[in-house]
Image 1 (cartoon, rainbow, N blue to C red):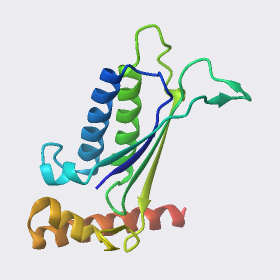
Image 2: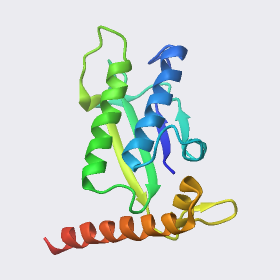
Image 3: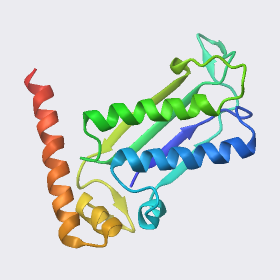
Length: 166
């Protein structure tokens, strides 16, 4: 259930290129979260909110080239370190590959913030939705959904504990 707030400056892309880019970003988010991008149930809960800054400033002046900010929100447990790193690289590449020829292929013009929403704090449909609920919706199997959530949340906790132990 990835949610993406995509900050793409006005006129950075043609409408056709932007539509293809948003579709590609959706596919990549689903893949790196561990879902099949062709799964209609997964696609139905993968939302992109497009924000249109008129101007982005760098060092107090209007930027000479477009700058992009992607804020990814997923339920806790869906992104381990490997998935997070891969997703950031893939989203950055997709943005730069979509740009017109002649723009500098500079990955430092793309910032990706991968956030995990703590278990028990994702709200949807007027209630709290847990990772097991989401996995059940996508797989159609409650037992599989619960097992997925148990495994992903355990991995997330172990990674967090390892960071705190350093």
